[in-house]
Amino acid sequence: STWETPYSPLCHPLIIMSSKKAAAPAKTAAPAKPAAAAKPAPAKAAAGTPVPVPESFLKKRKTLDEIKAKRAVAKADKTKKNKATRRLIFKRAEKYVKEYRQQEKDLIRHKRQAKNNNGFYISPEPKLAFVTRIRGINCVAPQTRKILQLLRLRQIHNGVFVKLNKATITMLRLVEPYITYGEPNLKSVSQLIYKRGFGKVNKQRIPLTDNSIIAKALGRYGIICIEDLIHEIYTVGPNFKVANNFLWPFKLSSPLGGYVKKGNHFTEGGDFGNREQEINKLIRRMN
Image (cartoon, rainbow, N blue to C red; front, side):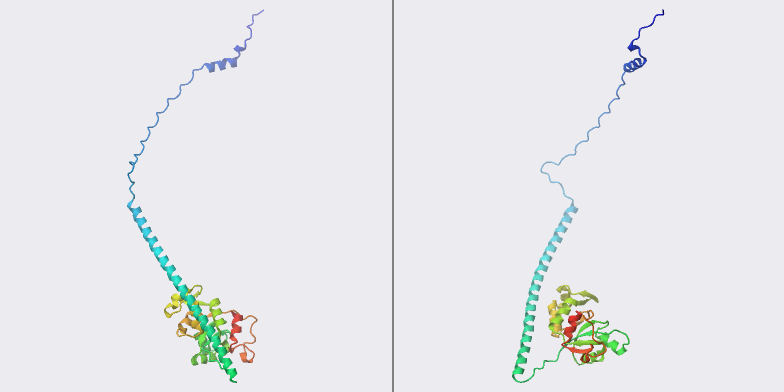
């Protein structure tokens, strides 16, 4: 028989290859790069030595300080001035209230005296009228159109205060079919100006939301607040023309409940013409 070599697990080909790989010499590592040279640290200022401040920064800080100081002074002056103005406004308002109450008491006293003497007290002729336009622009004569423009009644439901004299009464009578007017009381004047008051400032319609608007426009005439304006209009004072021209024509609403008949005079059960004291009821309905 032939001789056979005994089997040994170490003679397996895979084991022989792996052993050869293991016996391979290890690769030499790449040489390490030399470390970068450390940057020199910045030199520190010596202890106690102040760091210099740029000149531009100093100038800017000085300018800002000056601006702040000026603003503080201006604010203090404005606050002081506003406080003094408010005190003056309150004093004037109290004076006007006393004046109005005294007028009412005088009227009652005169009526009682006349009644005790078996007579009648006739109130003086009204000096102020409130005029409002109730008809449009259709079929308007040139003269009527011009008078309405002079009265500043260019649109329907526009309203203005008018000082009553011979000239204005004649104008009102010429345009009676297009307007209605009467004598307003203090309540009507006050409500109109407070609720629908606009001023004419640089030809612009500005709402009267602040007394400063009135003071800038009419301060040189002694009118610095809305109470001064109401008093000047209601009493038809010496500066009535300036104060009334400052007020923009009132833009009223259609009367609550509508008109009765525009084509008839008020005395005939219609709407146009002179209403005297009844104009106050119409103002309540239109305001």
